[in-house]
Image (tube, rainbow, N blue to C red; front, side):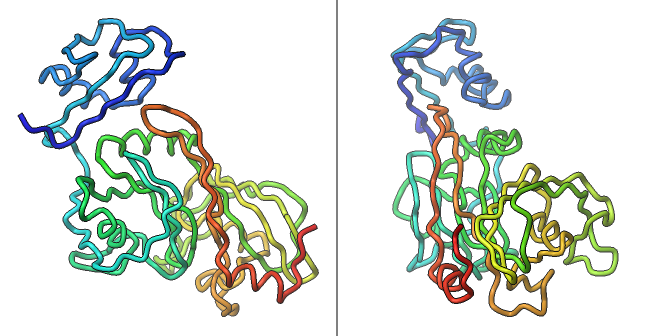
Length: 304
């Protein structure tokens, strides 16, 4: 039988002895539905042989997970028309995923069938001659730049989604904001939709949900501040809404600071990853765009 997706992993020297089910579910975070298919199709192999879920695995065992493809529930990737000349800055790549540096002004993904020019089109073009596809894990706004994680196979999508929801995978951002912010603190305001303009969000808007942002001011003068930001929640436009509500909107934000026309200065500067299956932590840095660095120099926002 031909298997569409195969995962091969050798357990580490320090692997704790445990039942196979606990390895798959508790350690590797595979969802129950995938474990179910592996069991009924007998396509989980330990050292080349099928093992029941209750059997013990230990250090240096070789684990194979074999998937036909019909057991995977993920959005179709055929909508991502591969770019013929993808412009992609790859920050990190392994068998299962890649981290790319999205430029300001590029959409993360298409909004309609046949749309091209997005980051996911570029990733699809980058992978076109491989056995992998592009699977979106998370997104950042059109005018935001920085690190974005993209899955290369559908097996890791639910794993990455769970790690993101638990806060084990997260980004840190740098932003230039109006005015002089306090040294550090948190912005703890619920965010919902603007009742008049559906494209906008606001503090205590319609169907507001809790939202928490931590910030640290890295440099400032009387007119601008460079701040490092970390999301504790992931609401739409959270950083932009929180900073605008605080009285320090992001420079160049077309929605929440429309009188500032420089181009938005918000960049996902670092990405903390937990690598699926090996479950090791990794920090990926996304270099600041040249226009961002030049702005800091010309506006004399000096690092203190």
